[in-house]
Amino acid sequence: MSSTDATIDRSAKLDREITVDGEAIPGAGGRVHLVGGLGAGLRAAGEVLLGTGAQVTASDRSNCDTPLPDGFRLSTGHAAENVPCDGTLVIRSDAIDDDNVEIRRARALDIPVLSYFDWLGRISADRPTTAIAGTHGKSTTTAMLGRIMRFAGLDPLIVCGAAAPDRFSGGRSGAGELIVEACEYRRNFLKLRPSAAAILGIEDDHFDCYPTRDLLEESFESFAKTLPESGRLLVRHSCETSLRIARSASAACVDTFGFSRSADWSGRLGRLRGGCYDLTVCRRGRPFCTTSLRVPGRHHALAATAVAAMAADRGVSAAAIARGLAAFTGIERRMQRRVSGGSVEIYDDYAHHPSAVAVAIDTIRKICPTRRLVCVFQPHRRLRTERLMEKLAQSLAAADLTVVTDVYLAREEATGGDSPAEVADRLARLIGQQHCNVVRSSGRRETERRVLHRIRPKDVLLLLGAGDVDRYFR
Image (cartoon, rainbow, N blue to C red; front, side):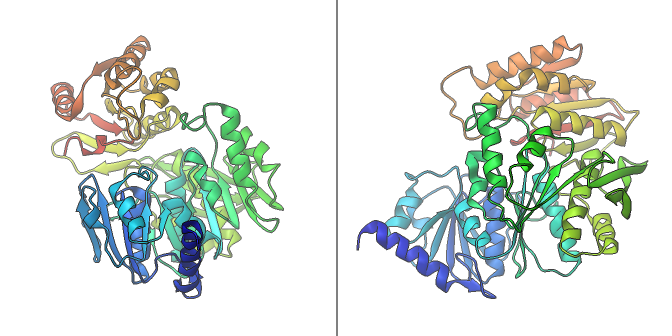
């Protein structure tokens, strides 16, 4: 038998033998090692596997600032000895390549290796799956739907890229349907086999793998076509691209959601309190349920409308949906309010795309309409910042004072092209041309010093970015 055939045979054996309640979960009940284990996806995978009785080890270059769950053992840094000799499976993040010392060690030990999305694909092939895709709102919508499904006693398996505050991950092991965040990066969502899906909207992003708009749209069209004829697809009514892609989907049932009354599922905003809306969700023009949200902003009300539609399709009652939405208190770094000393309030948000930045600033204006807003923005990835610079500047100019840090490179290399500092300098100049007060900084200590020198009593400080800006001002 060739080495390739042997690998295929081991993977098939893994799928046949490792099951939970009759549903295959690669690694369940075994000894699993996660390479890059502090990434949001692998954290969730680790918790799912722990729930199946697996022993889980992990390695990552970073340290964990959240208490580890029982049974989850973390090593800082990558080393061959981190891989257990009796391991049954290794799962790696997208950031880990074939030359990683732990991947080489796993293969030398004849331990099957799966990427995170290959692992998810194996699960989705063997149980009903709802995949939530789109440029913005995936994590919130996934967590919100999972919360309602749990509230209704449906025991979902949840894999979400963000956790509730003070939790280790957004993962949960369950015997029911898989509720999963479907990321378009590197076309990873095409590895899933959903029976239902949502497309929350499509905007230009991930320019390293989608250099043209056509390639991005083709990827989402392929995703929509992964649905079977019996599947259900929900798309955002106000996104023309999503609507066009929906027309090419295989699924016989396609619904729309949004704030427009012509959407199949429409959200009607009511009283606004502390930035949070009362919401009535209508089904084809008729009131379906009314609830009071505990998460602020129109974007959360939009997500709640989509979630109500998906939960209703699964037979959850209107009353249970209303109670579940009212009980949802949000996830980490999505308009998360920090406890702060003195009179300055601090909010933290993951927004790094122009439209998400605009939504975050607008939401703060509704929460604290009379307060001065100081925004610290950490640009995320050099290529994204360069491509979206003018739109970023327009969005950030809505703050009273914007502090721009160096670009957070993430997966990018530091060499080649303009430096992270030079790209951030250009962004700051553009913001200044929008007649907004702007300050440039470099690194955590300098940013904290510059902000503390300018902050005033009663100000609101908003931290924006997908890098490590959430660690500032701790």
